[in-house]
Length: 310
Length: 234
Image (cartoon, rainbow over all chains, first blue to last red; front, side):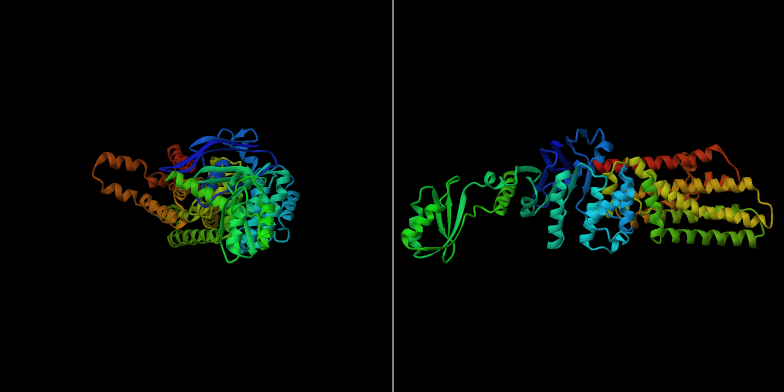
């Protein structure tokens, strides 16, 4: 559905996006993850035709953004980081304006009604946008992106600044959109991406540092695996006994009764740890195969990319 | 284009801008009308039109200051530029929106002509000719000010630069008289708005004057499209 090839954007000396390539299949929800300033918004702005790339191509559903801008833009609904709202308009008037601007061919009143219901704005059509709270404004931004049911929907950090309840609502909405639309959305919150997306692309400093399915993200990305153990008993015996288990690389005491066990990728040492504890007469209070957390992986990857550049 | 045109026009009247502009325009034109036509006891609107030249230079930056500067500051230009609408359509939509508000201002002159017709017989050909003149002058000033607005993110800066530009155009004759190098003075004389405008106020309709204002309008609208295009690439 979306094909991005060797996309590069330079602002004078600064390279904001550096030769990014990826494809998104129809119906896929792609998460775009990266720290602030990594080039997420720039990439999205290029895909939607707000700015032009220095080099590289973007093809959406067979049409190229530079050679056929009108046709391509018609296929994309875009919610930028700051929703593009005219604050002097009412919600309904604004959506009618966007409907005309996007040259949507559907029946106007019914379609706007339907979209407003979808984002739970149906009771707020007559309110002025300037009087709306941040959460409601975000919904109006969402509504305008959905107008005309475009096959591709691009959302730039849609949950920033919302309260937890609103964030959950927006995530649900994104998930439900994925059934009918191809969605790209960006965030710098990893848990959000892994909870909502089919696939995740991590970018840092304008480069893709990881591209994986959301549920595989973890095993693909993590190097060694880690076990966190809380056990009651003599710590020296515990450590020496665990070290005897094949596959274990390192055991560290991290608290009064907590230990962290690093082991080779692929080896599952949980059963061995259990019997080792029985042998030394220690009781396991908690054992968590909490490998490297996703946050840690994310930090490591984005730091590596930075380090490599300097 | 029609969506942007409608939004632009309704924007003037959902804020105070539209009403303020109409009020200021009506007040000054009314003042000049009363002073020259009633106190001066004449049926000619020439003086009123001549004086409105200066008012227009200040009014138009107020109409257009928001057009692109505010869109950029509020990031609403992202909605316009990512919609299936070309830059030319966006610029024209905004131009015609502003021109319509300005047209509403100008309609008051027809009212004055009707008022005069109760006391004397106005020369309708002259009335319509001057009306066309003031409309074309406004159109070219709107184009220039939309261009200025597209260069900045602040509508205050846009308005101030627009008024400064208006002042320069106002005082062009004064500058020309103080320049002793002939060829420079000649060139400035060729772009002196007042020269072309004055003919209309005398009721002289000449193709040169019409073409001059239309060219200025077209040129600055074209520049505006180029500025937006360039920003996309940088």
